[in-house]
Length: 405
Ligand SMILES: Cc1cc2nc3c(=O)[nH]c(=O)nc-3n(C[C@H](O)[C@H](O)[C@H](O)COP(=O)(O)OP(=O)(O)OC[C@H]3O[C@@H](n4cnc5c(N)ncnc54)[C@H](O)[C@@H]3O)c2cc1C
Image (tube, rainbow, N blue to C red; front, side, top):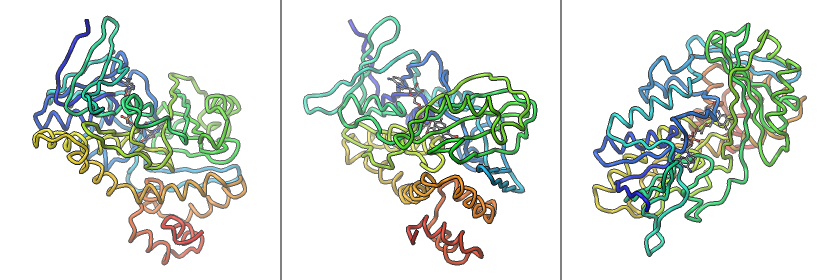
């Protein structure tokens, strides 16, 4: 016999998207179950955890969850640039601490969290709409019925796949990373490393977590490259390429591996009784494969819209549509622009990368950050595309807004 549970909302996956959706829905007074397959929240880390202090403050994430960054270094095979800001605007998260804080916030608002609970299938009504999920823990099968189901299961999109609504992402990033103790760490400076030896379709990175710990990683675009990021990462660390050599003695602490969708905003994200959020919705900036702030922000919107739909007594696609309209309005055109820059970057040879860094050198910290964050507002991009003192920069921003090559 399966055990049955009845909730207003069942959220699948307690990553940043799921915990944020659960938090916001519970805050609105509805009954929420949050299901997570792992032994504990964020048991496995699948991300580098870079985000922005402005967003961290907006979400209320505590100060002891991140390391601030104010110098942004880039290197290509024969060039190097560091853009230094007067204040820190970027941050590297303590991923476990942050994700656990997000889940705790949901719990404090009343969400029931079920860990070690893996979702395996969906339950549909006669019309074919979702009304629950089939899950299991180590002892038994569990049936969770909900008026709205939120698929926040990340890259795998388990709920929507079981519904037959989506198939595996075709274009995605694969990333491997070691968190290491290192002898010489500059905790305020990150490194992005570009060019064939680092990653043929992507980049490598050094992100400092504290004064003696950094994350060294390699991201590879699929299907553009067949390189295994883990092998490439081991080679780079062993042969101490580029800025890795400056870290001195390196002692690995933990290995991270993950996949992130890069198919643009191709998925419809609301159906009758169903919402997708975070990586399951493909909400990521393709330029630097960044998705945490979108997962939290749109998780909260999903929670709000779901709770409002429940209160109105309607949970069909139309009732949930404000969620999709909201997030598309906020990021669709920016993500398209980021995609254009990504297309340019993926095709660059080593020599072209050396020249691209000369263009990046001309950017002020704010311009650089807007660029890397895909914060491409139409008016500021147009201004840069027409008035920046350097022609190459004008051309780069022209490309961002689709104004030319
Ligand atoms: C290598 C790499 C580096 C990255 N670096 C950055 C970065 O620096 N900054 C940034 O902003 N973004 C980064 N990202 C992207 C970021 O990690 C994601 O966008 C973000 O984690 C999405 O959050 P999510 O909640 O949608 O999914 P996830 O964080 O993947 O959470 C999904 C949760 O669902 C659970 N789950 C899955 N299947 C089931 C199931 N069947 N039953 C129950 N639970 C299930 C999982 O265990 C997990 O806890 C990176 C991604 C990769 C791969």
